[in-house]
Image (cartoon, rainbow, N blue to C red; front, side, top):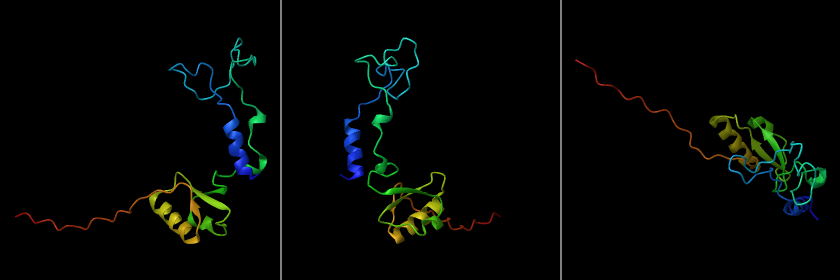
Length: 137
């Protein structure tokens, strides 16, 4: 079985690790380790939920891969696209990259045949033409 398919199968079987008292409005479901002295979840008592541990991890062969099956490469300029294999690599553009450089990276990736995981559509604005103001008398 493909490592990525195995990872997805294991992910479906994995329980939802929810924070204790997640049903309260002020708490929310995001996981936090139980630290209370009398916490039943921390004491591993039955029917009080699951604690995440190493046994729930994904297979070693699938780690670091995007769900598409391609390895992710972080890019901040167009020169970093040189030498990347489009069949095994997908590109993720840095969040701090501006519009002009992002557009250049996207164009270069398209020319090489690389997949961009976080593309943005935008039109580069051109500077407005200077309009002659009428002279005051």
